Length: 453
Image 1 (cartoon, rainbow, N blue to C red):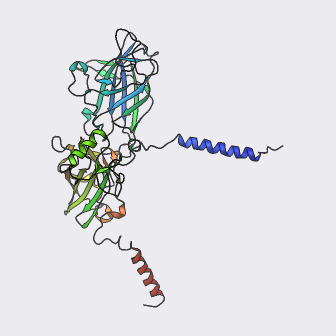
Image 2: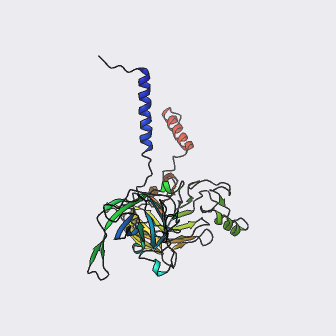
Image 3: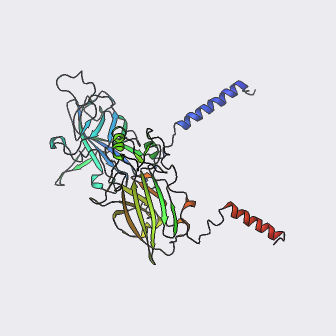
């Protein structure tokens, strides 16, 4: 006896399958957190319990920035989580909770924070020494690993109560969030790992944490911002064409009252307009341009020698609301394996894949051009790069001399389309791109075939 499916049951089954498929797709929203130029880059938060107390423990929490070129700039990081039980923070060093919460049930000593989901920030520089620990008090600013590894970590200490007093009774916090300083980071669940080992100052004794857990956070540019934050323009000595940033690279011009508004650099009383906007608007205050990006990177092929070629790189700040301190630029180009000299930028080779050396990190010289000033006359930094030619690969043809991709402060910049690159004067690539030229060529071929010519 066969099983017969009624038309109604068939329709219901199809609807159920479709609904399950939609829900499955929704649960796997792509955030593109993987970075091909820094495939192992992440921020790791290490929570080390160093001693037990009468009702809990004392822990040191350290935020390590293992990203090669993405740093945390002012106003700095903020770290949040949700307690697993009814824990409170009795006291802190090197950091502070942004809110105390309701501590009315406590008599006598009042905890530092009683919130179920606290948010902690770093202390500012200049805080008294009795409130500091190592790697604290930098206003939440953390350098990238390649640019300044000595300052690529930030720490604070907290005394936690109502938490359990052994490895079996302590429960790991949940729902970690990291803002640096805005959104963009997604944190995994806390995971118990092998206890951290500490070496004494004389390097003759090793101690270890009583319990350690790690939280790994990864960055997604799509979560951090709806539109890109930088773009690239191109030019060369052999072509008078200057290829601008693509139009509306970072959004299109709108009214100044809109969140994507812009400022006319020639407007009267510009300083007062910018000041009034900056007090109430944390968003970038961008100069009116066709691309509307806060940052533009210009790559100019300047000179051609017998054995070398020279490039000028200029970074321009169109944001009236931001000084970019400790900025950096990451450029991918196949000739970085033969970079001879960088004249006024620091340089470090990045090799995300050990056998390929085509990625470089550039940043400013300290006390000279390590700060990219706000939009205006001083809002740019520039340097020149000298490359040695490899005769087997070097060419100016087909856009080879232009970068493959450029990052500013870890964000991927919008590149012009390849067919818009400046071409050599004798390049044939543009000779048949015109529809009129194609039509003339076709008509000439037909006329030849039918004997008209």
